[in-house]
Amino acid sequence: MRFQSLISLLAAASLLSACSIFRPSQPEPPPTRPGPSTAPPTAQPGTAQPEPGTPTPAVPGPPRAPPKQFKLGPATAALVAQAHKQETGGNYQPAAATIERALRIEPENPLLWIELGQIRLSEGNAAQADGMGHKALALATGDAQAQSSAWRLIADSLRARQRNQEAADADKKAATLSPR
Image 1 (cartoon, rainbow, N blue to C red):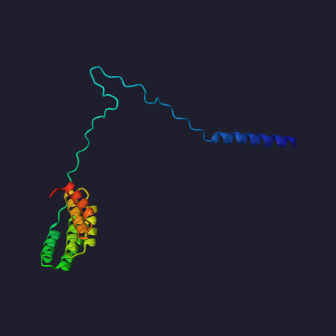
Image 2 (image 1 turned 90 degrees about the horizontal axis):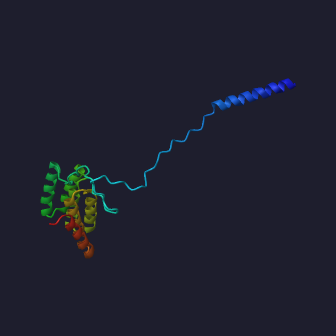
């Protein structure tokens, strides 16, 4: 019996030692690299060093894209011309419907939202005109002329609702973007 206990003990010990062989080893820490030197850089002979706190000159980046300018496509331009004729005759509903047709073609064109806002203002719906102006302003990113026109529409709609100080502020924003 004692011999069997000894054999069991030896078997267990050898099993434990075998398990430790297959245990993954601890990863070694990465070698440390020296950090950046805290010593001030040494000047090269013949070169001037900027004074501390002096801004560094801007490095030229990639060329900027020209400012965006929204235009009407041929189909929408024809619809806008038709809407202008309808509006001149006092036919505001058909004029608005014509611009809405153009918006189905170019829904992201702020110029069409401004046109629809102008028609809404002409028919006496200043609140809707204001909404159209804000929609146009949101779409006119990058086009100062379209943004200016949107601000002018907003100013006119505010003035129609007797909100003159807000209208003056909107006019200033329009003038800042693009003087008439």
